[in-house]
Image (cartoon, rainbow, N blue to C red):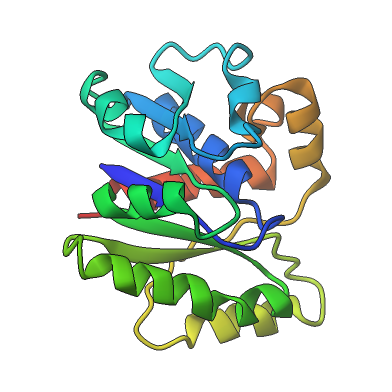
Length: 206
């Protein structure tokens, strides 16, 4: 299964979601590719630090993506797209089974969804199998606006979302600084639990 992880807005947890969801799937026994299509190569920084034998991280460009997918016999490929609706993003959407859109629990991020959803809709004219799932990130349930934003996302018509939400937590930045996923750095934390839950939902996708 190919999952394109995208949002034209940066800072919404796109690479964090690609990494930690991929690790959670690998730890469940699946063979996983994490393909870094973002020229900033933030995902590639974890290539030699995770130590998970059935998880592969590679940097690639749009024209090399099909060959990379074909040679590995992967159960899941997660494509970390640039924070822009670029050539790499378009190439990922042409071959993906699902477009996974991380949405930070902030009103500007929710308002900015329209453009990325339009891009996905356009891609579906070429790739009829492409489906969309939103995943809410950086959620502060105890804040005044966190539940309101989550309710607003749930109310978006015609767009499916995961039930799992990803909390805002300092462990994420500490894990990144150590070159680990949240599941390795703080295995019993709410963030690690959230990505395990998200992986369980992804395993049920069809």
